[in-house]
Length: 117
Length: 114
Image 1 (tube, each protein chain N blue to C red):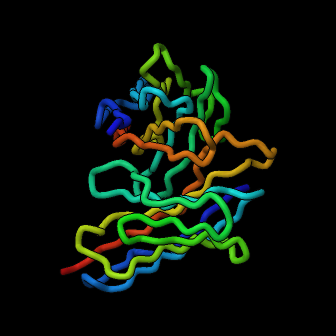
Image 2: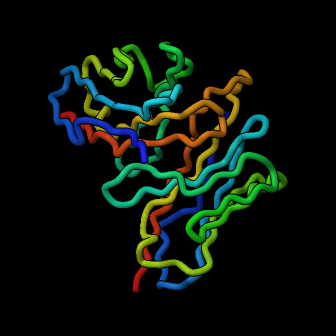
């Protein structure tokens, strides 16, 4: 079945450091890929998405490129801020083993990011 | 901006009791979902709902669970007889139409089973 693997966390950085959170996936067909963010005490918010190979999603300085050849969707940001401290989830939406899809999301385990001033 | 709302924010119940978690999806959305997150673990899919019926469910979603859209606005998750292992954060989500459309999540209901 579909699965998502994120890099082990937590990640601790100083403000203005470069961020990479690795995400790889296994899926049937051509899934859509997402990064969601969860700030303390809040629900999941979509950060960015990409729906086909070589697409780059971007938002709030974060970027991720859909790489079909390496089945990856790594999240990057050039200069993190304290306000970026949160849990980041990589997710995919794609057909199930039967070839149908109703849009369910399969999540990675989440990566806790802490940014210090 | 429209948002998904969930009530209550925290529910404490005794093992064996029934609980109903409530969600109000975004008004023009057509697809509805429940997910759960046990503390420290992944967010897991439970069930999807479209056109007044379940379209897909996970192996977690056994006979103890049910969903309903009793009117045009609410979407509920019922757990008939709660177990200790049902303690988790439960998220509701909704989506407009296309498979690549964004799923919008509610803030979650923390369920604690004692």
